Amino acid sequence: MSHLSRYVATLILINGKPRSILCEGIKTTERSLTTLANNREYDVVVVGGGIVGAASARELMLRHPNLKMAILEKETVLAKHQTGHNSGVIHAGIYYKPGSLKAKLCVEGMNLMYQYCDKKKIPYKKVGKLIVATDKVEVERLAELHKRAIENKVADIKVLRGLEEIQKIEPYCVGLEALWSPHTGIIDYSIVTKQYGVDFKEKGGEIYLNFEVTGFENSSDKNYPVLIKSKDGKQVKSKYVLTCGGLQADKLAELSGCPKAPRIIPFRGEYLLLNPEKAKLIKGNIYPVPDPRFPFLGVHFTPRMDGTVWLGPNAVLAFQREGYTWSDINFSELVDALLYPGFLKLSAKYVFAGAQEMIRSAIPSLQVKKLQKFVPSITASDVERGPAGVRAQALDLSGNLIDDFVFDMYKDSSSDSVGNRVLHCRNAPSPGATSSLAIAKMMADRLESEFHL
Image (tube, rainbow, N blue to C red):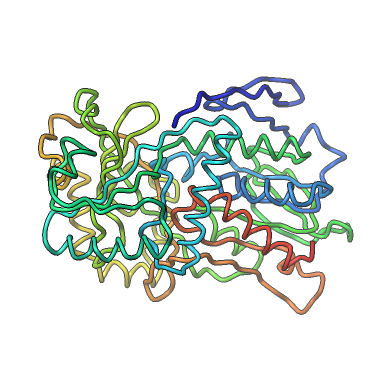
């Protein structure tokens, strides 16, 4: 199902002057701090304007409309990094361990996402997903995946046996068997996030862009005891703080006294673009069967809302937290990642797989070979280099990929300690975008519990 985008008229105040700005289909309202010199105190401040931060702020404001709240975002727009660079898939909840929080949140989140988009007239398409097995080992893994999907209560999941059944769904795809998920969809999560921001502001919340948080300190105001400082000298005060920093999550946690671990290690996922003629061959998402020996999913075919088809991604270490190309290098962040004990252990375990990923990054035709397992008619001449995203992978000291939510607070026996009032979400794992509305409910529950709102 598709919907036409609607445009929400808003006003932005920059340096005190009104200005209208279009943000990918939805206009949002932000105000510079210079316009609010005498009104910078809040009950709750959310640091981070990605989809999880914006959804959590919106949910808390809906529950507590009398709270005075703000979102602080270091970039010039919401959804600048992980949210704005992901594959845009609305996942159905197939992969996750039955009974796990991720499985529950994904299934619930998918349903909430479709309901929300219908209500707000945000465009999406239910193109479905095929998970394709191409050999006998993968067929066995696919059977286990099918059992998992049923236990997770994934709606209308179906096994397709043989080439004929597969090609009824994807005429140019080959394989022995496949799982068909008709409710998997595609969307632009930047538009969703900006609409969360509109909802938040309509309830009285404030959104401050260009506010890069550099510190949490005790305020002299006992009613608003947390002073939040920005890189360029701006300040706000709050009673309580929630951080949803994504790629900067661990750095924000350290600002209030939390430990370095788990550390965020940035992995860049690079996509190829399929040329328009061959893109017509792909109707929906085509995914591989996950290999349990490796930490990441593997390359796949992903149609986009604009009609393009992305191929990938790979997974290579990014040389800075927000490093979308090989030339994006921040030496202090790179050294921080390379010397982290958890990364050293992870890289030793997957040294061969990591080297292969780097080679495929340099030679796209090798990535095309992996894709030809599913659609043999795709050739290297049909693709060009495309966009990239960076995944904020939380890693513990033992080199384990953190696959669950991590909340952190630096609690101190002193009642006036800043750490007692700042809750950090240090990891909101994939599928965080799909699950954002369900995650927001969990976040709001946690805030109400911790801070007795």
